Image (cartoon, rainbow over all chains, first blue to last red; front, side, top):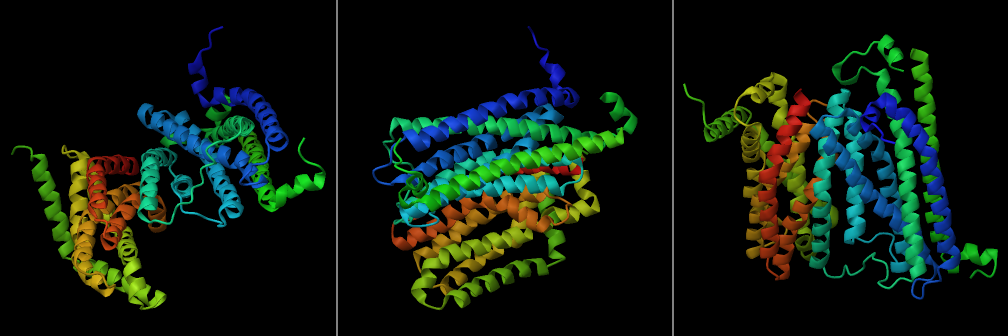
Length: 250
Length: 52
Length: 227
């Protein structure tokens, strides 16, 4: 069965398609997260050094990975939008941003929760946590920039440029903060998990990450549907869509 | 199973506050996000229907 | 009459912007006084102990220069935008990036260069001396134009938006951080006796990187804002 993918590049066609995909990803997410939590709490042993506090990594690491992964995906959609001048690409980027920001916030919060019992401090300025904090600022900047621009086309393209500039910044930030840590001796704490993790721990972490990924897809598709409906009501990109046209399109 | 009792499980070797806050806030945020998007879609769909 | 070359266009726009700025000489004064006042706030807040001041000097002076750049970004494109001159610039044959370089350079001469020239005095206020003073000045000489170029991207993205002052800060500060780290780090490493070459080289790399990419990104952002 060959699928005419281009058919789905129109928002009107994508809306029901996304609606059909969401349940699958939601179920996958639920199953994976449940399995991951089970392994994480009932199979993985207590860590020798960190006690049971280490179990926070089963949400911290997946959240952190998703926050960075989603940013890159968002930037890819932004780049596609700018390169192909394709409105749906911008809409995808718009749909991803809030979920990415949420995971960044969770990564920071759980990182803090992990750091306090493990390293004795609510916050440490190591490269990864600090980069995560900057990433949160970048997410918020993109969301606020879009919110500040009334013209939809300008909002799409401006936030896309910002996303791309930001994606270049992320590795630079990481490197510079690591550099900064080596410069200021005494910052020897690191949030890296202990080098040798039991297989069960790694498995649980990976399953949770996969679960978060499925969740992100489901939520992004759902938000995309909202964006599609909301944009239909506005005259998009300078064109004044009459109510009649909108009704006919459905 | 490595937990002797429910209270042991909740205590998490003394780190219960940290562990359960982390998992709790994570779960809360994800549930909240799902509900928020659901509500947003309901509002958007209702307004679209109101127009046409 | 033949088409002006790119270097002529560049010189032309720098000349024009500097001339316009000279009519508002207070702008130069504002940058200088801002930096002096803000730098003075820190000892007042932290205490006059010289060891402490010397330790925080690089960070304080660099953050102050950074804030001065941030606050002056509003003046980079706004006047031309309101006049309609900016839209005209989009139409001329010379690449927009070149014009951006020119505008940013002129802007830096007005708001960034005074800070660089003032920095030895401020460094003395904080107990820096000798080599670290030179390193401070050199780091700001490399860093402030970099900050201006990066900041221009934010200024272009937020052109004409309400509340753009705060929004620019939010967008641009994450991009400033590497420059801040290397710039302040050069002075810190100089004070620690480790030598500032590494940090200054990285700062130089940031300068070159932003020189190549920032004007182009700014031009893209300007077109988006004006179309």
